[in-house]
Image (cartoon, rainbow, N blue to C red; front, side, top):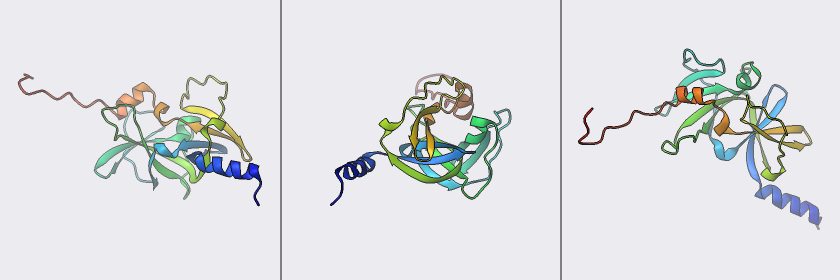
Length: 177
């Protein structure tokens, strides 16, 4: 016979949200799996001139060019080490409702595990980190603190405009150019 508290916690764990966990150095972070499109091994990237150091470039994926950022370089200024556990994670970048299919590549260290938990267990940090608005609330567990990363808040407006420029407006029939 199982204990009632154990059954309740097991049931709530099954009902929780699934997160992909990763590290930046010794620090732990998580992405909601609903934001993840695909997990790939590291690729070769075409650099983009005049971009921030954390923009690694673009690569061709299924006929589309996908911009890639290095989360370690973005967050702490040092590129992610190239290890077998370092992954290229493609996420849905949904800033433009007219282009819901956009993908953004994230280079993530140790992106090999998942965690299922109730999102309500994450707590506000109480910090106002305006330079890193993508860093959200934290969860304390047996391994320490785990911070939730918001995909939609990753790129400053200037970088978003560079990596995802607005397509040119199409002329309607009868309009003159």
